[in-house]
Length: 371
Image (cartoon, rainbow, N blue to C red; front, top):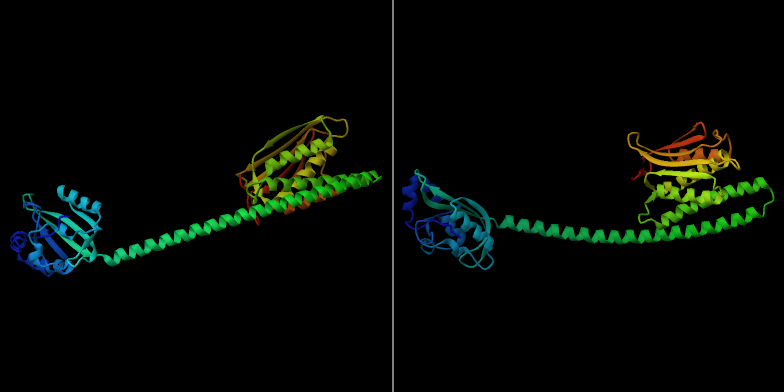
C-alpha cells in the first residue's frame, strides 16, 4: 500500500503547490499525505495533522516510510494488490481497505489515491486522502446481516409452505380418492336399482342419472391423479369421458374424432364442465344417431385468445337435432352454461348439428384458465 506524503517534508508542498495550497492541506480535517515515487519504496514525504490524528503516529514515525505500515492481519490482500497496480500504472483509485492505527485498533479506511503531474506531464508525487468510514461499513454489515437473516427466514417459510402444500395436496388427493370410491359405490347402487325397474321410461331416467354420476366419478379420478390439485386438464378428461360413453353405448358404427387443445381449468370448474360434456355427447348419441344409423361425432376444445374465450364444440353428421325444448337435459345444460358464464348455441350443419359452448378464459370469480 503506497500512501502518504513525506520525504522532503512540507517544503515539497510549499514549493510544488504554493503557500495557499499548503496551508489549506495542513488545516484540512481530511487526512492527507504525499508520497514521492522517485525515492526508493515511494515513501511519505508530507502528512497533515488529520492523518496523524487518524492513525495515532507522530510525524517522525511516518515521514520517510511507505505507508504499508497501516496494513495488518486482516487487511484484504486483493485491495492491496489493486492499490499497487494503480500506482504502477500511474492512475487514480478509490478503495475501502481495513487498516490499523498505531495502537493496533483496526479502522476502515476510505482511501483515494491520485498521481500528481507537473506542467510538463512528469509524475511528481502521489496524493492520498483517507477517511474513517467505520460507521458506513458497520451499517453495510448490519444491512447484509439483516438481509441474510431475512433470506434465511424466507427460505424457512418457503420450506414450511412447501411442506404444507404437499400435505394439502396429499389430503386433497385422499379426499378425491374417497369421493371417487363413494361415487363408484353410488353408481353400482343406481345400476342395480335400474335393472330392477320394469318401467322403461323410469329405467331410462335412471340410466341417464348413472351416466351423470359416472361423469363426476371421472372428474375425481382425474383430480386424484393430478400433480396440481388446483387445476384440471379438460382435454384429458374429454378423452376419458368420450371413451367411456362410446364404450357404454356399444355403438361401433359411430366414428369419433377428437381435436383437443390442452387447457387447464380451475378445479372448481371441473364438475360443471364434466356434466356439460356428458349431456352434449349423450344427446348426440341418443338423438343424432337413432338405432342402426352410423355416423361421425367430433369433439373439439380450443382457446380463442383474441376473443378471450374457451371454445368447446360437439358436432355430428346425424339426423339433426334441434335444441331439446324443455327436457331435463336441456335445462341442465342451460343451468351449467350460466354457472360457467358461458354462451351455448345450436346450429344445423346439413347434415347434422353443431353445438358450441363459449366460456370466458378468465372467469370473473374463479380466475383464469391455463394453457
